[in-house]
Length: 174
Image 1 (cartoon, helix red, strand yellow):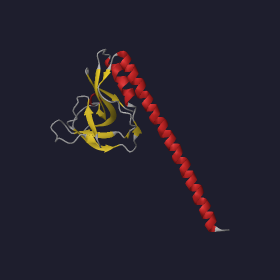
Image 2: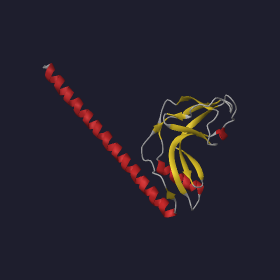
Image 3: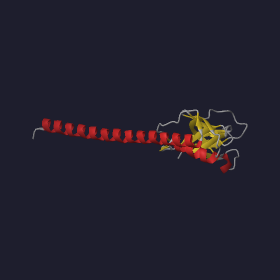
Image 4: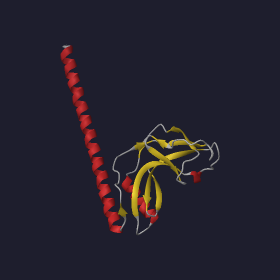
């Protein structure tokens, strides 16, 4: 048996297999990007139809984020930076004062498209003169769901913060 020839054939087969897998990934990603773009166009058409104005761009980038585990240290605790990577952390009081991030979850999950979050926020606010000013991906802590006392822990979930003329609305992104 000619080992040099066998190695060459094996390398060629493995390279061909890698090219096929790469092609499959590119096709899948382009389908998803096209779907997100179509969802955005449909959302914009619907919002225009019902009279909602958008003064910002609707993000179409796919993002995977983990949950964050936070601990409440108390109102008088030292101020800390309330971001994870580039994403701000908010509570339902629009201030994350008193919270400290302890760790991030081990696994990241893909967040919902921003266009879906905008439609959900519009449905919640039910305002015919609504203007959407900003759409931002962030983390949200619902401090009403726990007993906020020093040392208590909670989870910050990825959310879309949608600033409108009627106020700020958070839509959980999982």
